Length: 285
Ligand SMILES: [Zn+2]
Image 1 (spheres, helix red, strand yellow):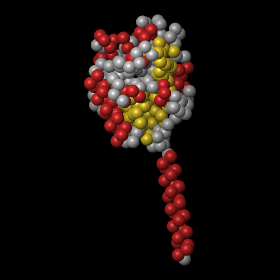
Image 2 (cartoon, helix red, strand yellow):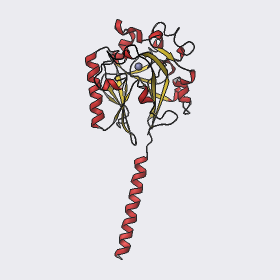
Image 3 (cartoon, helix red, strand yellow):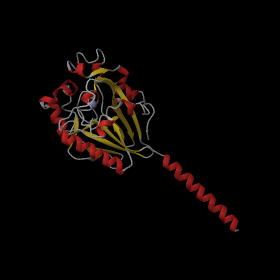
């Protein structure tokens, strides 16, 4: 009898172990990583006072998060209008300092199609900021709700003189009547902690980064331009900044969250890091 009880107990334990391990792998959130092409530029733009004169190629990441409560895009990359002549006409002179290379199938609309979605399926477009390599295709989403920091929206329309070159007004000149949520605080998008926007101003006046908490992958902080390169996490000031003080505090903030949650910071423009990613149509969950 004792033997039977014992084996029944073992079977129950096994069943629970099986159930809980299945549960641990259950995730109905998928995060896709992709790029809208590459930029060639002097590394000095990214790591102030180091590596000036070294030309490098960097990825221009975009993220698509398929959450049960809605499809989310984080940054829309470079405008597809740079495709015909690598930005010479659409971007103008700035395309000589930031040299884009992009093919049409790298546009966010086609990236969505590559996973069986369309721009009209997207519920929220979250903008890290409005620079030319991040909000280039906002106009493809007239029916989505756009989430941007209030300070970013105002400064994109009238940037400080020294920040003007990286804002291409044509990217968003037709979007004034779009539905914007203008955030001034951190925001837990769906109330479940899965997607949280955090204030990381410094690169621009209204820059924000995104914390994504995935059941299997864990905590990922999508830094966008709050930290472009590994050097920025080691104390090297990002080359393009509105406020050095705020930019460095934003990096410390992301590191604190990373360490607290045993997570990772995914840098905005590190080719070395990007090459390690599983890319769309594969995903993280
Ligand atoms: Zn950027």
